[in-house]
Length: 387
Ligand SMILES: *[C@@H]1O[C@H](CO)[C@@H](O)[C@H](O)[C@H]1NC(C)=O
Image 1 (tube, rainbow, N blue to C red):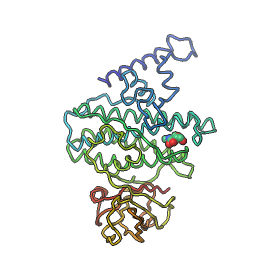
Image 2 (image 1 turned 135 degrees about the horizontal axis):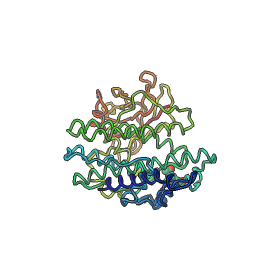
Image 3 (image 1 turned 45 degrees about the vertical axis):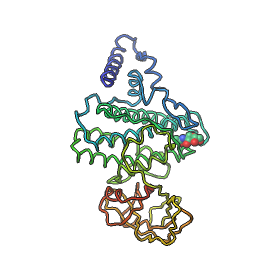
Image 4 (image 1 turned 180 degrees about the vertical axis):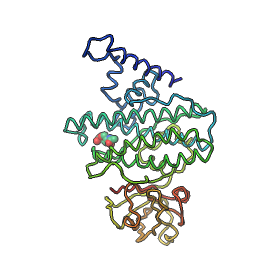
């Protein structure tokens, strides 16, 4: 229903645009309706930027009307898929859609807040060069609308399969300047790019092949965004990070997203049956493209006396590119109350560990895939970015 209306809207626009030159004198701008004009000029604004209650945006997202969807599609430079989803889906496939929706809501919240900060000259987010500022705002406005359509597509599919659409949370962002915000956008986009690999494999393994192409199209789309965030970072990064992007798992992504939601504000997060691991912190502030020792910490949150615990039962696993996970022992383990701090080698040279690396503390070792690591994980993910 929605996509039919949206398509009709686009068709009307196209005919308007092509009809315009015939009606208007030469060199007159084509006639476009008011809502379309404002759509191309300004990004939707968050409900509030103070308490993390970003939604609904001024464009109605995440529950836009059919007319508002037309505007979002114009800003996204394209439409929602207008074919019907397949008639059936596996239970695991439903979880894929739920995770995609949960993630896209976060991404939309982040970009709406970031665009607000830039356009309102919030300290730390002012971009002095007008040409550069325009390029950034235009790109982020398109990215926001594209994330909005990703969400509407996933939640629309959930509704089609008679499942609850995922509702937004209130969000918290750690970034207080433009550079850090773009670095974070690149990092969470890298996690998404890895996680969608897992999503596609799960669809394929559970008879949901019809849902794989749409997700694969989003992988490329997020990759285009990621190249821009890399270029923006001013760290001499080239847009193309790696030959084979780092893989991830649904549980790693779901756990990472918990860091951006205000606890207790997600109306139906509990309907998503994925694991939430304990937090693993990367203590080392910057990771260089070289072999080095990194420091991590996690909080056991328990009063048990761990001073005699055998830490050799645990390993640190690094997931990078499409390689077999790299295992390192936890060394120099320090116990302070419930907080455990340890060191581990980051063997950059041997594996050329550029781009995203996901670190996880697991029970045991000898894993051959990210999924196997994920199944044995206690604390994760720590997200490492190099080059
Ligand atoms: C926007 O600015 C506020 C105030 O500095 C900050 O707390 C918030 O994290 C910023 N948003 C993003 C997405 O960086």
